[in-house]
Image 1 (cartoon, rainbow, N blue to C red):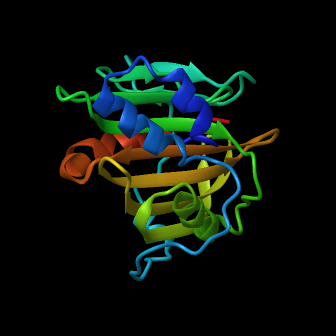
Image 2 (cartoon, rainbow, N blue to C red):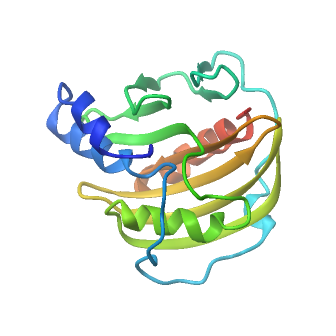
Image 3 (tube, rainbow, N blue to C red):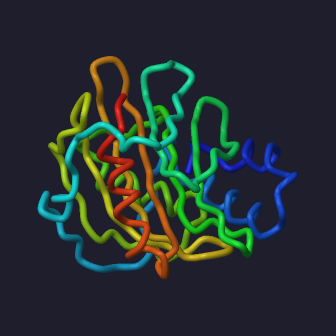
Length: 207
């Protein structure tokens, strides 16, 4: 879920095969340029009500904190999750299952392409499709959302990678000095269990 998959592929050759395949697939799903139409269909719930869980607050006690190289953006992740390598200038954390597959994923990436708060609902799903994800379907989107240190636009969608299916929350957050993409994703069978943690991580995100 960072800007490109290429650099992540080079950096992650040490990982077990199943985990490597999942991270390579997820590595293309962050910021960057996206222009193609999304795959799949479905009517999006384009309303802030879908993001009623978003409540800007400090991360819970005991959570770990990863900072981008600029030192401003801070991504919190829960106990039991591990920091994982991702593209330079980004931070990622994952919950790895006993089968070495990613069950849950968090990432923060500086804005790098043509994404804006106004076009995020179109840009994000199109970017996922450009990066090779299949059957990308937007479930909800909203603008004018409040974060701890700025405002943002968010999308909820689901898609298939080369190795698994994922549901995600992806937000572009604009702070006073920088804009950052923050993403939380999980495999569908774990979504009900992990969504509260993903939502808390995104709610506590600061840039």
